[in-house]
Amino acid sequence: MTKRVAVISPAPTANGDLHLGHLAGPFLAADVFTRHQRAAGREVVFGTGAQDTSTFVSTTARRLGVTPEALVADSTAKIESTLAAMGIAVDGFTRDEERFTKQVLNFLSLLHDAGKLVVRPTLFPYSPGTGAYLVDGFVAGGCPNCLADGCAGICESCGHPLAAGDLISPRSTENPDDDLELREVPILVLPLEDYREQLREYFASSGAALRPHMAQAVREMLARPLPDFPLTYPVGGGIPAPFAEVPGQSINPNAETMAWSIYTTVLAAEGRGEVVMADDQLWWPESGTEVVYFLGFDNTFPFAIAGAAMLLALHDRYALPTRFVTNEFYELDHRKFSTSRGHLVWGQELADRLPRDVGRYHLAATSPENQRSNFGWSAVAAVTGARLVEPWNRVAARAGRWTGQTLPVSAASRAAADRITERFAAAFSLDDFSLGRAAETLAEQLGRLDRWEVTDDRAGDFVHQALTVLRNAAPILIDLAERAGVNTRLTASDSTTSIIVPDLPRLGTEAV
Image (tube, rainbow, N blue to C red; front, side, top):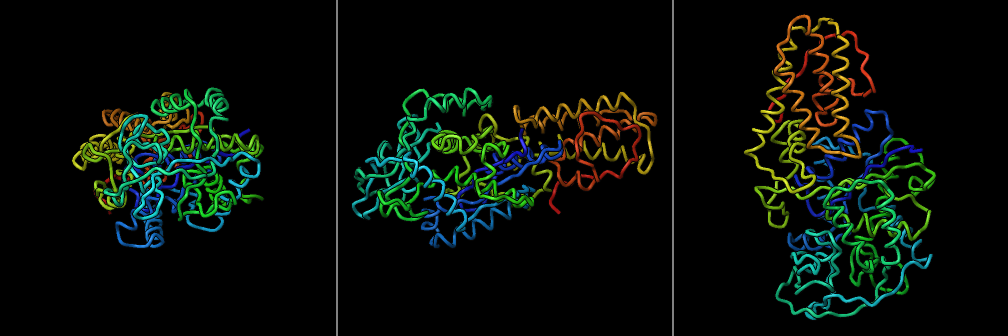
């Protein structure tokens, strides 16, 4: 019996603020899903954070001429501020703190002490000029699986793991003219191939309907022998590895996934007033926690393949995640958002220029769920004006003729309200979750109400259905629902027989 749902959006790298790609992808989706689940009466905790151990923190700090510590502190504050500005209500937010480091080391030590990790000689690009081994953000090259160019770690194009030593024509990202060598270094790895059949069974039996791109990536990865997953790297920085076999090495940031997930869940539960006896308690099978991830497609391997394998390696100590809801890249003027190239729109900029509900609606309507989608300022007014702001304001103005009056609601309107709730629920349900369809449903219902020739004898039905639409759209239109005083609790069937017509608020097009 499920006691709670743990909603998790993987922590963005603490090397800058959140851009619209972050918001339109996992964060808005997780927030909307969480709000709808609570409206339906379920107990939900929602956690995320900021990752400070990524190599991209170091590369960005060097490019900006600041210390990694200063960059992390500034970025973490900005990430939290932007989430709040866009109404992303997070219960638990992880950061650079001792309790998290302890959780990572405890989790990986469980694997180590159980004999699940092995020392394996592994190839890494090496720079003779700097005396450094290059991993993840420090080295780029071609992906041997899809040939796309990118940094080591995970291929953003095909989602497959991309070991630094397997890159085609590797080059240093900080010193592209360096002549690199491949050198073998013993590191601790988790042999993923040992868990391939269990992973196949997990994805086949979980009943989780994966979005097409993730389904393809998982199918491709599990159709061939899985690579060793590095738990440690022969580099400094990050969390120092405590294992005697690999002195001077650090923990691979992508190996923090499950320990971080467990940690963000307990922080989120504590943020909602829950008292737990152990930091990993909510992931025990008997705790009844249903774990749901909202994440970018490029996080498929570290969370769904390597992460699940780490849990399987610990047998039945922890429950496996229930669902992974992925998104594709969000583009700006038909090119991928890029912090390093300055090709982006910060989330705070959207919050500064648009009312929060209007911004949330536009991101929902253009969310990159199954394929890349595009953001352009010129499209915002057209999309939000024609589909949301203008029809809602006309509906609100029409309802204003009866403000303060008590009007009857017919059985036919109650039946219509139930259909409205069902249509929104279909878009918000975990099996078929879609921000885009929720936004489309909202636009369709507002269009229907906007075309309604309202007479006095049907005014109660008109206002009743307008409020029903707003109640169901409240996970997106959080401020409008609050200003209207709408009770956002959802029920299986509508029992309204009369209604006092409120003064419905209007939507603007500029932030106040």
